[in-house]
Every structure is written in structure tokens, then in C-alpha cells.
Amino acid sequence: MALILGIESSCDETAAALVESDRTIRAHRLAGQEAAHRPFGGVVPEIAARAHVEMLAPLVEAALADAGVMLAEVDAIAATAGPGLIGGVMVGLVTGKALAHAAGKPLIAVNHLEGHALSPRLADPGLAFPYLLLLVSGGHCQLLLVEGPGRYRRLATTIDDAAGEAFDKTAKLLGLGFPGGPAVEQAALGGDPRAVPLPRPLVGSGEPHFSFAGLKSAVLRARDTGAYSPADIAASFQQAAVDCLVDRTRLALARSPGVTALVVAGGVAANQAVRAALEALAARHGLPFSAPPLWLCTDNAAMIAWAGAERFAAGLFDDLDVPARPRWPLDPTAEKARGAGVKA
Ligand code: KG4
Ligand code: ZN
Image 1 (tube, rainbow, N blue to C red):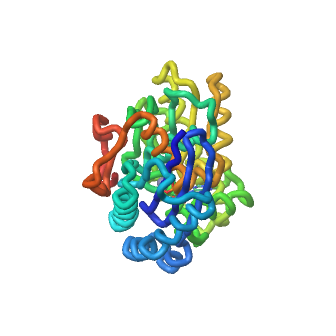
Image 2: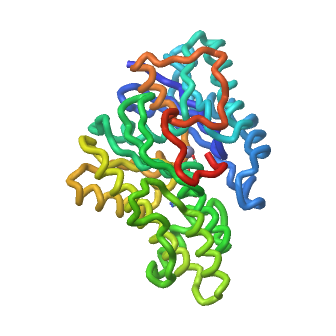
Image 3: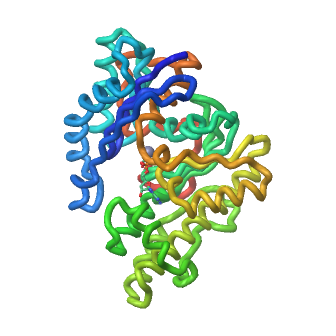
């Protein structure tokens, strides 16, 4: 049995958690920064990095106190080393390195995407490799074959915006506030998903990848007609996004024989319409469906500690000079998607 301290600071959540290799979450602490970023309508990297500096040490102390353990009783320290906003990643990784060095414990540099990718196994002990994962967050929208810690095959990615980015931009266009995903989901509850005709980019094509930029532009045009309520636009956008996610996932499932389950993770996996549609898709394919509880979908440190526990068990450790990486693909062999631009 191993006890892992996890640290997360790659975007706008500062978090620390203690997780055991038997999946017991001994402590998890999270400090969001929404209030600091809200006036700007999005995450400001410099503000985020400064907030991580202020919040992280007290959060680690609080998590250790919650679990009733000393740093000396921890078996390894897992810190997010990328991808993400580099200032924040450096704060968390340097803190992890300092703790590892001071306590004489091994360091595990965790890819934030691996944190999301393995998070369903923290909540679902029955979930075995290999599984097909739809990873949908603010910065990424990928279909991955998850074969084990450090072993991923990327089947699809977005050629423009990430799914969460599309939710966030839609919220901004409709004046629904920040963070956008939950605001769009809330507004959509009062709207008609068939009210606004919106495109489903790439749906029905043999092309494996995602595209959301055209959908966002269509939302802007629909808003500017003045003919639709924000609730109807939100509901119609959410339905279009769900249709895109389901269609691309269906294609990937057809191309992934032998998977044990269909799994969704990342911030957008907190969306009930997304979860329900994917669960129905899995059922049509006779596959189990797995999604982490809502709090484990959005950024947190329990998923980083858990990825650390999985890597610990596999003997995957890192040196103290491991770099912080703003970009870090889970599958470095994946070819660039056709039409992919500057976005990661
Ligand atoms: O995984 P995450 O917390 O951070 C990244 O690694 O990006 O994902 C954040 C993204 C944001 O774009 C946010 O708007 C979206 O997840 N999100 C949602 C919901 N909750 C968070 N999108 C749709 N519906 C939600 N309920
Ligand atoms: Zn994330």
C-alpha cells in the first residue's frame, strides 16, 4: 500500500490531496480562483500563477492535517508537470520537488491529461484497461485508447477549439458568465434544444477528429439575429456539441475492438447531457459506461495523486530536474490532425 501526495496547479484551481493505492481518498483540498478571474471573463495566467504561490503551501499543510499524517509518512509526491499555464505548472512542480527533496521521497511528474485519463479508475475499481476515453476539458478534446499508465493511443483530437472552450465562448457570447460550462448547462435547462438550427461540424464524415469553431461562429450569428432567447441558444448549442461528441465517439468505438468500457473524463464530463448521451451510446454498443463523480471531472489534486499511485505501482518515477512543460501530448507518436492550427 502506498500513500501519495498529489499537487495540481496547471490552470485556475490550486489543489492538494492524499490518496492511497487502495483508492482511499484521505484528504482533498481545492481553492478555486473564479472570483479573481471573473472580471476578465477568462483565466489570466499571471493572476493564476500568483494565486497558486499564495495558496499552495497552506493547502498542502491542510491536506496533511486532514489526513492526520506527516510528510514523512507519504510514499511519493506527485505533481502536475504540464500541460497547462506554465507559471502555475512551475509553482506546483517546484513545490513538489522541494517537498520530495526535503522529505527524501520519490517525485512523480504527472501529465495533467493522464490525471484526467486515469481518474475514472479512482472512482470505479472495476474499470480495466484498455478502455476508450473521451477526454473533454477546457484545453483538450481527444479520444484515447487507454492501455495503462504512460500508455495512450490518441485516435482523435480537435482541429480547432476544445469542447470546454466552445462552452466557455458560448457562455461569453450569451453573457451567461464565467466559468462558462456550468452556466451554459444551467441556461440550457430552460431552453428548447431544437429551437436554433446549428451545424454539427464533421458529423457523419469518416474524418475521426473534432471541430467546434464553426459551431461557435453559428452561435454568434444566431445571437445577432435577435430572434432567439439565450436559453434556446444555450440548449441548441449544448445539443449540437453533444451530437458532435457522440458521433465522433461512435466512430472511434467502431475502430476500437476489444475495449472494456466507454469512459468520459475532464471538466465537460461534468455535464449531465454529455454523460447521458454517452451512456446511451455505450449501451447501444453493449459496453459498460464509466464517468467519475462530478467533483472528480473538473481539475483537482485527487486525480493527480491517483495517477501518481498508478505510476508508483508501475515503478515510474522522475528525477528532480524533470522540466515543467506547457505542452505535453499523452501520445507523442500521434500525427498532427488535418487542419490543426496553432492550438495544443
Ligand atoms: O478539466 P477542467 O476542469 O480544466 C482543464 O483541464 O481544462 O475543464 C474545464 C472546462 C471548462 O471549459 C468548463 O467550462 C468545462 O470544463 N465544464 C463544463 C461543465 N463543467 C465544467 N462544460 C460543460 N458543462 C459543465 N457542467
Ligand atoms: Zn483539466
